[in-house]
Amino acid sequence: MTQTISTAPLRAERKKHQPTLGELVFWPTFILLMVIHCMENTTLNYYKPGWMPAVYLYRNILYGVLFLKIAFLTTYRRKELWWVLGALVVAVLCWRSTRDLQMIEWATIAIAAKDIPKQKLLYAFLLVKSVAIAMTLFLHEVGILPTLYYLNGSGPIYNTMGFCHRNVLGANMAVLCLGWFYLRFRQIGTMDILFWVVLSAVTYFLAISRTGLIVMLMIIAVMCLARKLEHRLASRPWTPQVFVGILAGLFLLCLLGAILYREGVPFWDSLNELLTKRLSFSHQVLEDFGLRLFGQDLPFVTTMAAQTSDAKPLILDNSYMRAILYFGLIPGLSLLGLMGLSLWRAGKRDHISLVACLLVMAVFGVSESYLLDVFYNFPLLLSITLLFRRPTRAEAVRPVEYALEILRLGLQRGKQLLGRTGG
Image (tube, rainbow, N blue to C red; front, side):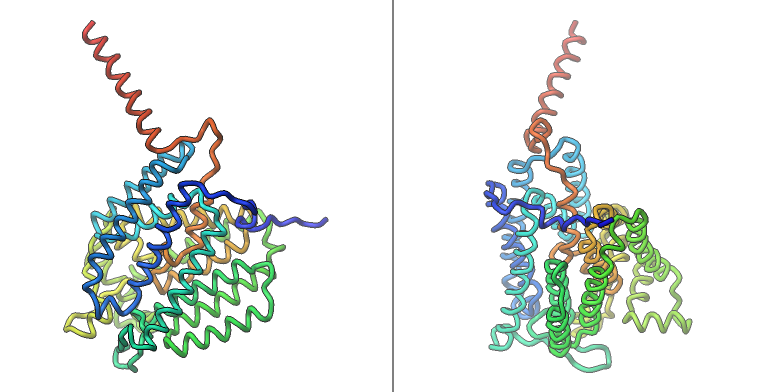
């Protein structure tokens, strides 16, 4: 019997699509937010900090625009509205504790993108990333973006090529590589593999980022393997449990490593050295600051800041530990829970290409915090938008309309109670 595998979710969209008012508001806002994020990733952060306050004010206004889009221009099912409200409240509480907008970025962008064509969303994401990388390298070469030299402990000095850290170029190239193989999942061929192997080597030569090289080669291997095993993995009742189990296993390993780490023990010292001190930093933050429900404003000291001062570095690059120690138990576990739910649903629907992308980001999260960044983790962004269902005409309601309806019912109930009391 021939087994039929469902196509990727992006291919299910209509070929002809008329943009709505909500989409016309979303696209320029989303693209400008991505541009601002890409600017933050350059050396302007260190050499021209004067531009940042004005840009951040403009960024906050853009998030306000997305919030208005959610409230006035997007329809949801009534049950979904409570999840939307909960996500926004948790994000705001996390921001109040950490003064970090990352959870608000997730909540507003993912919820506002609910009715956006997913293929166009991914194309826009990758296009802005590609142009930003090319522009950063070009502006650095012509001298507009200043050179930033990065000292790796007592080792060699690295040129970040216009980016704020040498790993940023590798991470952005890894995201482009992942997007390429996702879009070409059914057409992956020898030229795709050779092209990205060469780009991986070039990226390593430019950035000297071991993490970036390893992740890009892992992406090539995982996506090719997933394509080869697609028919075997599809429609197997146990595959969703295995996918979620991998994510849970990675989280537990990182948590146990942070708890059990002991300096001076050969095993832990070797593992910590292999992970470039990520274990010791996680253990230090856990011991010194503990856990909070909605996160805490930790006194991070970047490698660059430590290089130019007497302070010791304090970095929390591991996504799993950063999620619960920095962003807090409720926001962090909620985001990781969405990651698990996305893996489950993608596995159930035989979207093996999306599963592979999510698993790549899950492994990437062991060494870097990009799993928690909406401007890098496009597989989770797409997955969250796919959690929403298209409401029927009877179900469809805008948040503002629903709030006014609840207010009206509340006033009516209040009048009834006052009438009974007066009687």
